[in-house]
Amino acid sequence: MTQEPRTYRAWKALVRRLSRPLVGGDQHERLRRTDWDVLVVLDACRLDAFRQVANWPVEGCTSPASSTDGWLDAATESGVFEDATVVTSNSRYAEHDLGLRDLHPLWEDAWVDRLGNVTPEPVLDRVDELVADGRERVVGHVGPPHAPYVARVDGEWLPVFPEVTAWHWNPEREAFEQLSQQAAMASGVVDLDRAARGYHASVRSVWEVTAAYVARMARAGATVVVTADHGETFGRPRDWWLVEHPARCYVPALTRVPFAVFADGERRGAAPSSVEEALSALGYAEGAP
Image (cartoon, rainbow, N blue to C red; front, side):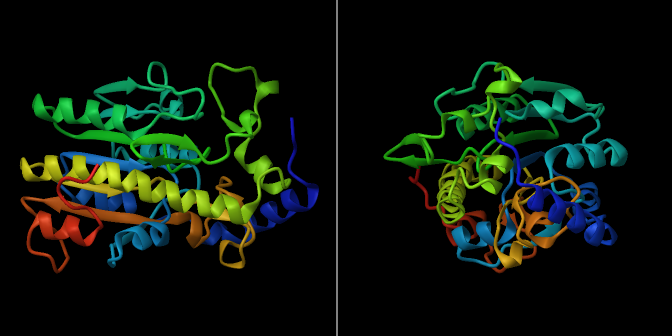
């Protein structure tokens, strides 16, 4: 299994120490103050990447963590998901006691091996069904844009790095068959510039799909929040030369995430006066995929 270079591991350890005073974040407190019906979590979606897709100044918040495990640890402490129903493609939820009403583990039956991921549609379809049945406080944790990066071309989801098959993590595979995203990026197996381009293509594709579901649920009267658990990094100076999303590295590229609220036909705290105008500003038009 490819390992991270020693110099990278040493730098990551230093960043962890330097960024420790930045731990905290306002995301979970904002979720507590928001009477949301649906929470859509776009795994590893940076705030600046989402704003580029939106072409509009989406509000941001600060996540309490730089990885999903840390984010769920914080959720366990805050109780922000107590009595919620979670639909997720991320198996980490099974390892945390969040006090959920129900867990729908779509990594078990919606996994696409050639992508190494679960596409957004199965998660959002299940969320849509639960909301239509009257279920309250439904969380939909969408896998992409988390690596391995996938993008939608002519209605089909395709892997950005089809040649790096070991990078397509699968919970059913043995550990020796895995190649972690971080190790692949840090060791040069995956070109970082290419990875960044693939990531942004994935963010765009994911939002194009997700926005249609958000529009439908918001028009039906649901309060929908769109956010992320953490961001993603590509070895750039503004990323503190980190790659992927190492745990306990509380730098803005990893902790600043979107916080967009659609409620009662309007988007809170924004200029557009209707959900249609808000979604249009965020890059969604009715009839889009």
